[in-house]
Length: 131
Ligand code: HEM
Image 1 (cartoon, rainbow, N blue to C red):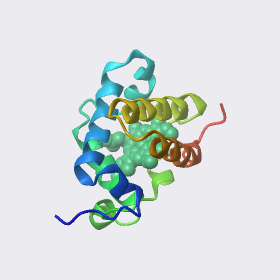
Image 2: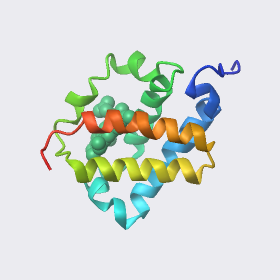
Image 3: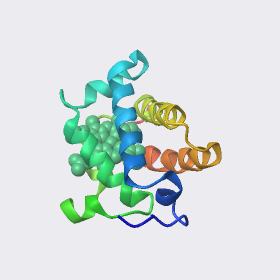
C-alpha cells in the first residue's frame, strides 16, 4: 500500500490501520461504558457489521479510499439512520464515545479537535427527534 497523502485527515491519522483502530476502540467503548448504554441499545447484538461499515465509511469521509461507496453506493446517511430514534441524548453519546476513542488512541490534539467539530456537524444532521 502507498503512503496516504498528508493533505487529508485520513493521511494525517496514519491511514487504514489507524482508522480501523479508532473504530474498534469506539465500539469497544460503546460495549463497555455504562455512559453509552443508550447508544449501544440501538445497535445489533453483535457489532461486527457495524464496525466494518463505520470503518469503510470513515476512510472515505476522512479523505481516503471510498470503500463504503464502492460497496453500497451513496451513503444516504441520514436516511439510513431514520429507523433509529436519534435526539440530543443519542447524538451526544455518539460524540462523547468518539471523542473518548480519539483520546484513547493518542491522536494529535489539533487533529482530534478538528475532527470533533466535523463529527458534530454530521451527528447533529442525523437527529430525527426533537429533544
Ligand atoms: C447521532 C448519533 C448516531 C446514532 C445514534 C447512530 C446509530 C447507528 C445505528 C444504530 C446504526 C446501525 C448499525 C448496524 O446496522 O450495524 C448506524 C449505522 C451507521 N452509522 Fe450511525 N449513528 C449516529 C451517528 C453517526 C455518525 C456521526 C456517523 C458518521 C460520521 C455514522 C455512521 C454510520 C454508518 C456509516 C452506518 C452504517 C450504515 C449502513 O450502511 O447501514 N453514524 N448508526
